[in-house]
Image (cartoon, rainbow, N blue to C red; front, side, top):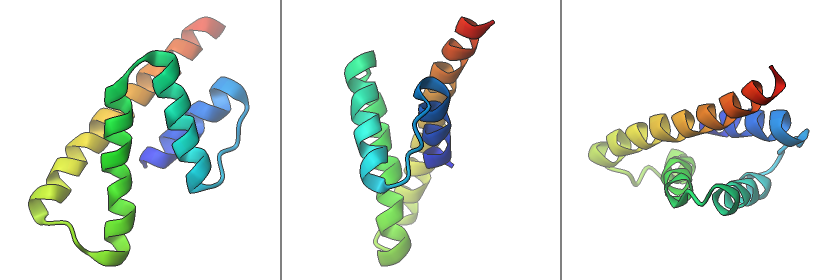
Length: 90
């Protein structure tokens, strides 16, 4: 869900179609630089840790619950960035 939100933002904002993990990571880095929101980068790193966990199963239940909260926060930040674009066009 977080990756889809990020892809939506990239497309709506710049017409970019992010299609690889590398592109997702680079786009988050770009957003952090532009917005000076270091928390956005931290949240993305947390959310992305679940991709590895899907294959490895290392995370504890407590960690997974924390990442769920981080995912919600990340998506809220992306929504705010999306809404700022929509306000520009209306």
